[in-house]
Amino acid sequence: MQKETQMNFRTIVELPTGLPPVSHHERLMLMGSCFAGNIGERLTQAKFRVDVNPFGTLYNPLSVAKAIGETLDGKVYGAADLFAHQGLWHSPMHHGCFSAATPEEALRGINLRLRQATEELPMLDWLMLTFGTAYVYEGKASGEVVSNCHKLPEREFCRRLLSVEEIVENCVPLIEKLIRRAPGVRILCTVSPIRHLRDGLHANQLSKATLLLAIERLRAAYPSRLFYFPAYEIVLDELRDYRFTADDMAHPSPVAVGYLWQRFGDTFFTPATRRLLAEIEEVEKALAHKPFHPEGEAYQRFLEQIVLKIERLIEKYPYLDLQKEKQVCHTRLNLSQST
View 1 (tube, rainbow, N blue to C red):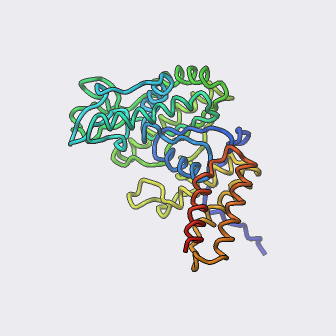
View 2 (view 1 turned 180 degrees about the vertical axis):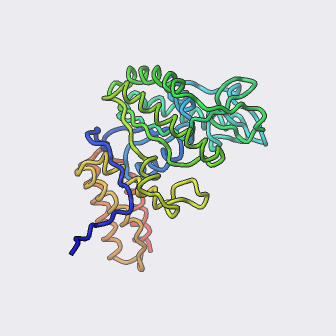
View 3 (view 1 turned 90 degrees about the vertical axis):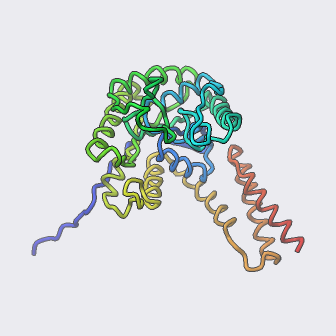
């Protein structure tokens, strides 16, 4: 009888090995497109010390590079850096989440986040960059690449595809400057798996290929400093199915984002980090619990046990920020005891 062979219906992407681990005591900053936001949100929920997108979502590598440069230089934005459109004041370097009804309000949010990032940057252990597209929009009047068009008429911009050389030439001086400012920093690059369907499928592939080639050049130039995580390949190959795509047929679904987070952990989390993640998750699940009798003694004892667990975690890992969770417990205890 012929022996049956086990059939495999998907391609598993080989994860990079030997990369430095990512730990809770380290300081992280993420910049770039939606993937940076998705993983950054997961890292934040898991209580890593992380700053996510101080300029908001950025899509192209020239805008990411400029954002790093302005952070290194401690730039302070003024009214001349903004423009008004459709009743709001915008920065061409920032996502629309920074836009506001007055220039003062917009500048307040922009400069606060930029000041925080500038202060954190010399202490960084990881700078994680996600490039979304190699297409850029240049203002015809200024000749400058913008990070966000803010719904200005398309006729005001020139759209073009960056070359591999242009991306590398813009990034290398900033990497050198970053290393001088933060000697221990490591850089992780990814390419966003989000498809830019508006470009057309062929143009989207050319764009992603340009980004991949540029990152490979940078990785070859800084082999012990700059690393690559295959988020793009995982979604396109391991999750080659539209059930892992959101309704717009371009963005990864929540299930796909969860799987990327799992594969990210497989690459960067040590067993000790995983144990700590499990303890943090236990606290979060306990706080999400809705009691039938919040005024009862049993629930009070339950809350007291959570407080003790949080205090033990803080004592063991003083860099963990669990003050919010501790305050929630105390607030609920006070309410429970007053009823």
